[in-house]
Image (cartoon, rainbow, N blue to C red):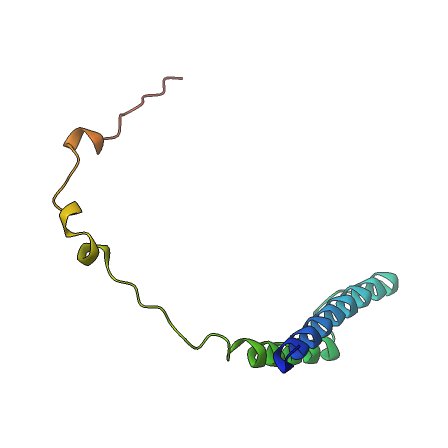
Length: 97
């Protein structure tokens, strides 16, 4: 278990707690008959902290990129083969009601 895994588990716990806190807050608002205008500030702070932990865990993993060649360069002989025109025409269907 590396540091990234531990931080990732901690992040999931923080986001789960933020979800639970928001649900509990909405239930409290239903009891007091008030409108839900948004999550409380501690939930917003937990979400931002979870976002920071997510970025810490995920950014070092995605460092290499793959390059793809265009198919025209890979298969030049398939470009010259075309289907007859009749395969590209869609039949018209008239609906009479």
